[in-house]
Length: 260
Length: 158
Image 1: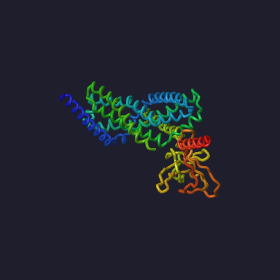
Image 2: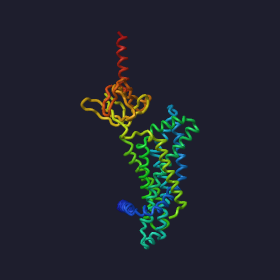
Image 3: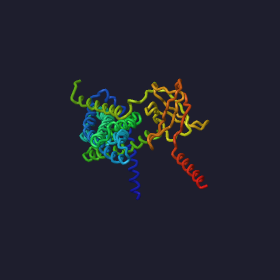
Image 4: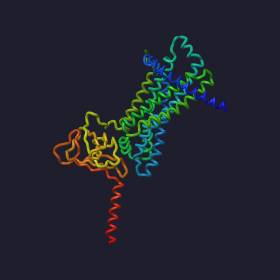
């Protein structure tokens, strides 16, 4: 009984301790991120690995999500004789929620896990210690560019996801099912507002980009330098950042889309 | 510093992202018809009942969107709703224009309809509509209908 209580207390204190360490790590990275812009090539390399290489998974899943939304939306809306509103449904769900959230979940599992594994392995093979020996700051040289690469890539990926998704919805409802193309686009344009819907979606994706890369980098940096430690850290990255995305999404939605 | 293949790919990535954003803004959203701040003027209308009218609801004349509702407030002196709308500078309305709260479709969103009058002078920035008509509240209509029916029933019984 007492042991169980002690275990719980230990877990809580440990969790808070780690959170504090993570926050300090994040602030330190931000403070030393001058290098990421002075030597922008380093950041560019990370944009390539995190963003460009995620293009295919983002494009394909965006297309399918849009097509499913089109099919399901049409199925329900045609019962009420308003099949043209399917454009509005697809565009609003994608720009407000699905675009940023699903793109961030995919980004977390594709790029975030890779970042954690890479940094964890660098630590396990003592590359990070070697850098410190050579008076190269590993946070400025390794962590900073990855953080900024993720923050720059994420909104672009989310915008592409939404755009491809809208195209997928168009493909299914207009080209395959035969909803009128003019009504599809005009109803969509009537309902989607640039500031309210699209810019808020972009803000969401920037926040998710910060959260995912910060979690991935911290887990990698904090990983025990063993094979087991790195694999555990990679799993934790995906789990923690997915939960963080969904939680943050709720908070941001509550702020953005109420009391209009 | 040499150009590399990596630069090309990052360039392609950024261009694709910006294109996607532009597609969302112009084709999906309505950025192309958002009014600039300098090119609008404000008009005020007092309604007895605004029903379900909300901020940012469209202001239409002859079915064309000419502006948006910018503010809704309760006037505690006269017990009416004070609705401020911003209207595109290109459109001028006579001073006896009729402002009505209408509903798009049977259950759609509510908007303000403007019907031009015959006055020579047009409404200036900040002026108030003289003629307004409140929103139709379905419950009141049903109530009236039932009341009339009951009155009719009394008459035929006699």
